[in-house]
Image 1 (cartoon, rainbow, N blue to C red):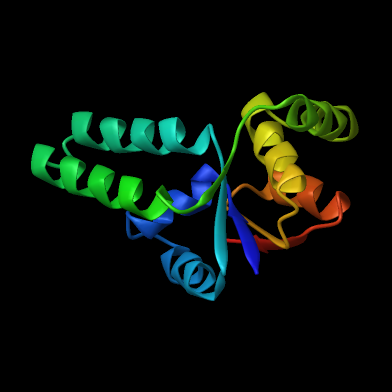
Image 2 (cartoon, rainbow, N blue to C red):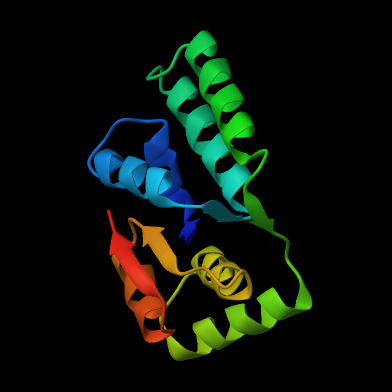
Length: 137
């Protein structure tokens, strides 16, 4: 099963917070992890912010980054293609979304994901409208 993770959900794989157990369950259930190309910079940005806020040490930051890079080495990562842009624009025209959230939706649709996992309620509503199974964490 192709499971797409938005950044807000996938970061829970590395940082224990509400929703982590559900994310771990869907990571285990997936036959293929799917991400947008923007997910990695967004997740690294979150790790950097946590380090600046002294919620992570430099060693913890490096460990989380290494784990992320290992996990995505065999994931399906969707580039920003003309098809993704087309699908993103459709999502923006039909829903109230931030641009990056719509790129995740366009990427999931282009990858033909079967399940979309996110922590963003507005994004989840738009994904459901687009016809994907949604798991909100």
